[in-house]
Image (cartoon, rainbow, N blue to C red):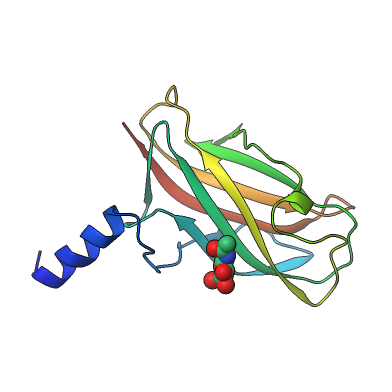
Length: 149
Ligand SMILES: *[C@@H]1O[C@H](CO)[C@@H](O)[C@H](O)[C@H]1NC(C)=O
């Protein structure tokens, strides 16, 4: 590691913004379009999620529809099997989005991902959906993470 890389890593470890967006896969956003996914702190990819800590998630998307509600559904996909991943707030309208959602409008969906200490230290894929009134996905994203002790 050279001095510059070392310095950047140090800043990241200190909690400074490491402005690298998370690499994600779109898993079927139908009534919206995602432009950016940000997980903090995440200094390397896949994001290393430490047990007992909480991570902030910021999904920037455009809606194509009007919707009064928005509901988040989060799964951890372990060896291809989706397991419900509990988050503190399922209501997207209380997660940085001002409802009703309007078409052709850009939104920042903000939430936290708490990593419980009883979770196993494994690699998994986080699948995060935000559903509209008709249960269509305003967004559906998948990104890999690694849970570490
Ligand atoms: C969420 O991400 C967008 C796009 O990068 C940014 O403009 C916005 O400030 C972020 N919001 C928070 C609370 O970090």
